[in-house]
Length: 229
Image (cartoon, rainbow, N blue to C red; front, side):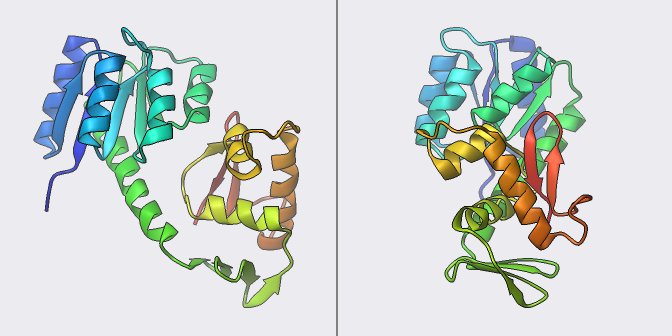
């Protein structure tokens, strides 16, 4: 089995070498770049399984690199930054980052989270190939565009179903309201992000045992929503 390829885009040499050494010891196939432009070029050439991307980079910052990667490639992007402000984490998630860690960090934590992101991406690919997603008593049938709870079909508006399927097919991954709006309502949508909150509330009333204490469709404070399978 081929080793998974990881591209590290980081301009601090000591961090770059330490992360490269650690991931190589974990049997990953590691590539490196020291600025945004070089990193973007290598990502498009190598097509790695995951990109470890610093935010503060020469020539092109990590946010811009992430935006371009998201438009051209389908792979997890894990952002690294010296910044710890919540706004930076939210911006990273809004532009499509799969995870975010701030310096300084332990190598053990980094490896664990990298493996988690890769595992999640792999399971997401498998789930998206399925016609039916099952979560306890809930089943979501893509082809027939219906959802059932304990075998009974529940009435859902098209956007409710689309939102439920989108989150359930990305189990464990948090999405911001803006990400959801752009994905399901389109980039030209000019309505309020509370549209997402309203649809989430409607869905919870139909799939949760106790909608006021949801166990499947979870609110991530300061970020958005996540589906827990």
